[in-house]
Each structure stands twice: as structure tokens, then as C-alpha cells.
Length: 376
Ligand SMILES: Cc1cc2nc3c(=O)[nH]c(=O)nc-3n(C[C@H](O)[C@H](O)[C@H](O)COP(=O)(O)O)c2cc1C
Image 1 (cartoon, rainbow, N blue to C red):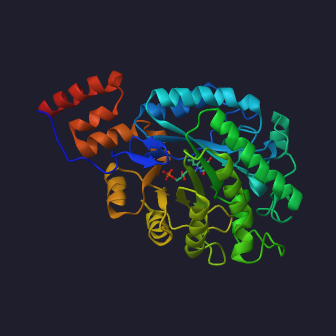
Image 2 (cartoon, helix red, strand yellow):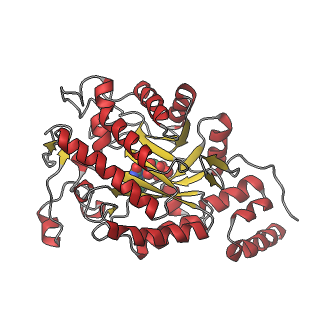
Image 3 (cartoon, rainbow, N blue to C red):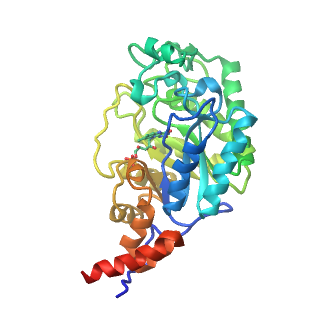
């Protein structure tokens, strides 16, 4: 016997500018540390492709460096060179053929660049990495203060250096467009360069680019403004924030609301509400622990939000949307565990109608399999 349930909000489409997302499920950006010279390869094709097959609407690449020195590790994806466009275009084509959209997260790692791949230690590159051929490189930050004890000392960016980085974000956004990406997200979270300008924990400059909240927002807003101008008007632009630093002396949710209003005025479409990123960040982890932050930003900045962070079940995601916490729900590790998370969520929320969200090659069989299982 067929099962029927009401349509869910999670599986209703969302229009952002000229891009229609087939539902509200997003694969959160997740570094794979598996590229060579920033170039995507078969790992990235299969890794990102599996999520498109799995029913997600929007699949984000990992943090994709806008300059080589802005990589977290030697294995990061990049878009600092035209040679990186075609391998990414192959992935965009594949994702599109599965009915999903490709997002590219553009990033500069700042003080947290020149790091080990997590499985080699997840800290700054050291002698063991040098022996593997992964040499450390000079890094930059808002000041010359390292990210933490034992970390590389950055060079403080001057005005010309800041302008070069803004230009690199623009050039990378143009390459993302050339590759066929549908969405660009500016990475402004997790202690990387733009977040390190925003947060008073890292930005102690006393020039135009530091000090007051307006000063600390200047570089991230300049990047957002320049990317918005270069990124096609029909394509949505997202900005990922650490909505809180998790440190009373740091960036607050009130600051995020102010930033989101500024971003909205620039033409950013979605604020993606993550958190943390400093050695002193203390976060109160738990299922959906950042949903209230996405809700506050959505209500107080009047802006679409993407929620992320321990969103584990279909029901949890649906309830978050129904409450109005967010417009989109990003799934990270639960998608690594089950690349068909979205397809399974559709069946859980909508019964047999949910099989329409599966590729026919799997769905045709699994719908009948599910019916048989119900007779046991
Ligand atoms: C393997 C891995 C790599 C990640 N890489 C990135 C990244 O490149 N950019 C980013 O903004 N967040 C990154 N994150 C954070 C995720 O996007 C997400 O915000 C976080 O995992 C919380 O969501 P979850 O509880 O659903 O996993 C990464 C997380 C994981 C597990």
C-alpha cells in the first residue's frame, strides 16, 4: 500500500534571483584536502556528485582559495588560475545533470593558512610535513599576531595587500561563473581571513580597517561589494559568518545582525550562520544549536538565512523551516555519513511521494523495496 503525507517545506523549491533550488537542502562546504595545485579531480567529482544524486538542491564546494597563499593546506581547491576552471566545470555539469545546483565557497585562510591536512595533525605545517614535500609558506592577517601559540606569524596586511585580496575574490568569482557555478558564498567565518578582520579577538588594528565595528567590517564588506558587482545579477550570493565567536570578548550575534543588514544592502542574498573558529571559542554544541542564531538574523536583519550545525534529521530540518528559523538547511557530516540524506528525508517527510526526489535508477527499485518491507 502506498503511503501519502502532506508536502513538506523542506522539499518545496526556493527561488533566489534567477536560480531555482529544487528544495531547501544544502551540502555545507567541506574541505577534502585532496586537490593538487588547487585543481579539482575525480575525488571532487564523485564526492560532490554523490550529493547531487542524493537529492540535495545545492552542493557547495569546500573553501576554494582565491590565491594560492590563502589555502588552508596544500590539498585545498583553488580558483586563482584559469587552469582551475575546466575541472570545476566538469563537476558543475555533472551536478546540473542530476538536477542540483553548484555553489562555490570562496575563501582566504589568512592566519590559518599553511596548515596540515587534519590527518597529519591539523596544526601549522611542521618538519614532518616538509619531509612529505608540503612546505610552509608566508601568511597574512589583520595584524602580525599569530592565530594561537605555536602558529605561524602572519604579516599584517597593508592597504595594497587588502586591495589585492579584494581583487582576487573578484577574479575567482568570475572563474566560478566561467565554470558554471550557480551560487558563490564568501567565507567570512571560522577564524579565516575575513572573520579575523571582523572579530575583535583578532583585529586590533587602529586604522580604517580596525577599531570600531564599522572599521572591522570594512574589508569583508569591500569583498562582498566587489564580488556582488562582478558576479552575475541573476546569480545568488551567500556570505558565511561565524554568527558568534563563543567568547564574551569576541564577535556577538548583535554584530552579526548589523553585518547582515549591511550585506543585504549590498545585494547579498543569504547569510549562512555558522560559529566559532578561534582557539578561545567555546561553543555550546547540541542538535541544531545554531538555529536560534539563524532565526535572530532572519527576523532582525530581514534577510534569508541558511542554518547549519548538527542538523541531523529530516524532522529537525522541517521544523526549523516551519518555525521560520531559516530558508535553507545545510548538512555537513550527516551528508558524509549518508550522501542520500536528502532523498531519505523526502521519503520520511512525504511518504511515497518522496521517491520522486530520487534518481529513477535507484528510486524505482527502492520504492518497491519499501512497499515489500511494509508487508513483512
Ligand atoms: C570535513 C569537514 C570540512 C569542512 N570544511 C569547511 C569549509 O571548507 N568551509 C566551511 O565554511 N566550513 C567547513 N566545515 C564546516 C561545515 O561546513 C559545517 O558548518 C559543520 O560541519 C557543521 O555542520 P554539521 O554539524 O552538519 O557537520 C567543514 C566540516 C567538515 C566536517
